Image (tube, rainbow, N blue to C red; front, side, top):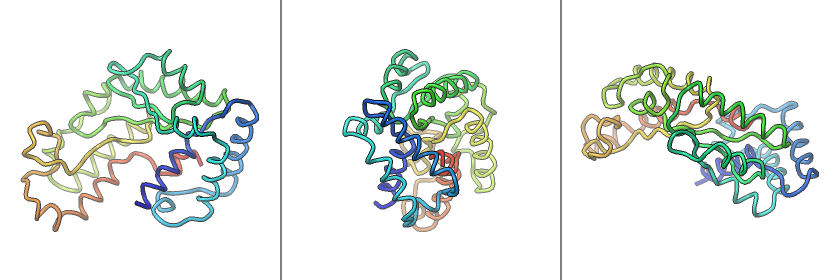
Length: 234
C-alpha cells in the first residue's frame, strides 16, 4: 500500500499544474527549480521512507486545488484510437490532465507529440506530463510502429532474454519520451484473451507463486523504461 501511495504522490508531483492564475504557475515552477538543485531521487526513494521527498511532494500538492488534484489522475489517450490533438491540447492548457497514453501510432509520430506537449506544458509554467504506452513484447511493434522488432512474450523463456529484449523496448521508449510501460507479466496462459502475451509457459499457480515470484518481480522492474527521478523530472 505504501508503494502505491508514494507512486500516487509521485504522479501528482510530476504532473501538477496551475489553479487559476500565474501566481500558482510561478510558485510551482519555483518549487521544481529548487528540487533540481542538489537532490536526485531514484526508484529506491519511492520504495522506502524518504522525508526529503515527502516534503517536496507535499509542497507542490498544497499549491493545487481539488479540481487540479483530480485532474492529475486523468490520462487521455492519443493516437489512432485516442482523442484528437485539439481535444488533448485544450485539457493540457488548463492543467486538467496528469499524463497522456500514446495508443496506436508510429515512433516518429509519438516522438513529435511528446515534444509538442512538453513545449506546451513548459510555456504554460506547468510541470511535465507522464507519458505511457502499452508496450509489452507481443504488442509493442503493433502499437508503436517503427520500433525494433522483438519476439512475442510467450516465446521468451529465459531471464537473460527478458533483460535483452526489454532493454531494446526501454531504449525505444526512452527515445520517444515515454515514462511508463503498461506491460503485464503474470497473466494466466490458458486465458484465450491473453494468448501469446503471457510469460507463463505452463499455468501452474503453485509454481508461479512459490518458485518464480522473485523472477516475476525482476521482470516487472525490467519492463519499466525510466528511473523514477527521470519520470519526476527531479
